[in-house]
Length: 386
Ligand SMILES: Cc1cc2nc3c(=O)[nH]c(=O)nc-3n(C[C@H](O)[C@H](O)[C@H](O)COP(=O)(O)O)c2cc1C
Image (cartoon, rainbow, N blue to C red; front, side, top):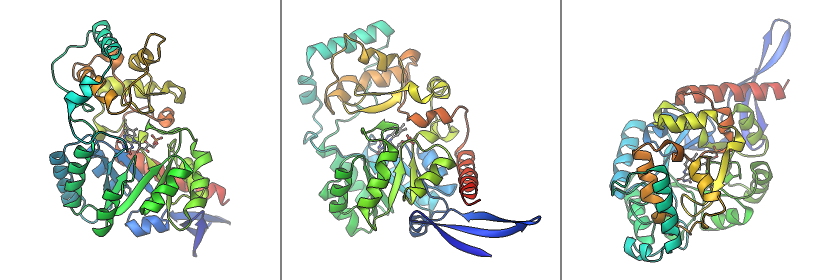
């Protein structure tokens, strides 16, 4: 006998079977209205900056979302072509971050001129103390200035593509949402507070990701449990996806119970081989407990949860200046961050990571993580159903 049983707003299929002398209820599918709409087998969005990992997530039943915010239009175009060619009809998307209040143009010298001497001296001091070679090359955060001009160039490439899903990590500007809707793209907005969800709904988002404080990288102040049901209530018929601290099938079952129709995970992929995390960073991630992640504005100017390192410690010390705002902090530290990575200055190497990092302590693959999440979610739901 097969029955459809609602879990939150989802529809998880349950089979009642006879095993020995007992009836047991088997969960045979984790589909929800949202996964059915998008054509995914599992209610798992996987956010990653690695194209290999994003493709693997979609191939293994989820919805791979490639983080493109620090990529050039040419790189985005190449990535979109690869995803389209390799994934065909499987669901996938890209994520852009378009914060309000950025400068109009990609003018590095104007930003440089506004950086206070005290901040420059502090970064020079760090460079000297940790012996970071200056190879004259930029890093990921300083290869271009985050500006309206650079965002428009990224968006132009996206609008010329067959991209099925566009996610907006910070900011939901009308000039992006309007054209994306005209092209039939599914629009996702990440929010950390009810007022942000209201703005995203007004702007026309199709899916809201409610991202709690536990999350890796840019994060807000409200915890996932406090946030998700509030956003579900506020969103009515618009599907909500839970993010921040999701690491196991138990978290996925809890997210469905809170009314989310899927989860959105970022930290989970950092130790997958497809992510290509540097071994020194991977070692720090494997050793980290939840409390070993800290929130610092030192990387980008906005609050960014990351694995603790000599970098975050230095910026939290009494002698450190307060980090600048985005994009000034990007330009202040972007080159040195790139050089730390390229020249493997181990004490300063770090990565964004969420509190869920405590659940990940070995090198693995996307296929193994996905299979584990699926089995663990089914087990959690079956336990709940007796
Ligand atoms: C290494 C890393 C980089 C991230 N970069 C971005 C980004 O560029 N844009 C974005 O919208 N979210 C970014 N995020 C946040 C994820 O989209 C996601 O909301 C978050 O990872 C979910 O929480 P979790 O880390 O507990 O899984 C990043 C997360 C990680 C771990």
